[in-house]
Length: 177
Image (cartoon, rainbow, N blue to C red; front, side, top):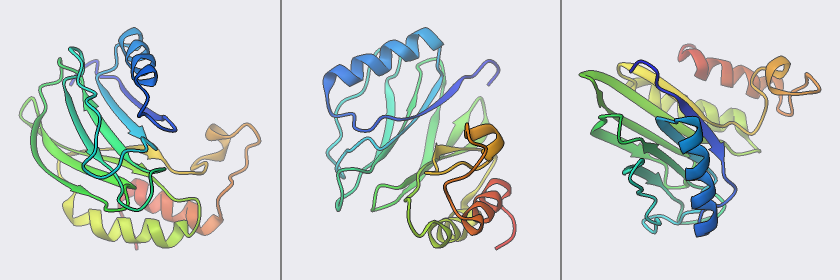
């Protein structure tokens, strides 16, 4: 997977065709290979057709309970992704996708974290996904807070608690409990 560009965006709703065009125009300019989208606002099993010639392969996770959630993972046609399995959150907060690219196993995890009760949510997610991780792990998404405030925030401060930051760091390294 040399020269692969992965992008992650909170799109704040992607049901409007105009937003589809804007996203794909941006992707074409940036030569994006794999795209992680959060807050798509897709309902469970009611996904718009995002397939385009450059991005024919999509995997979605929507929500039955809230239209303000949802995550998607898309692959450029130049990425020969071979699907093997997935786990999706019924609340539309994460999608774990496994497959092979160039005979190597990858686990993609796209997260749209809640902005309340983050410590419990991240600990539950870690417990669930740790035994499922395989091969190269690509983790991205909207964590609803600055994981590294010095890099992720102009004020150098995080909007999430120290306990939630600790849970996020555990998630980053997939160790501890």
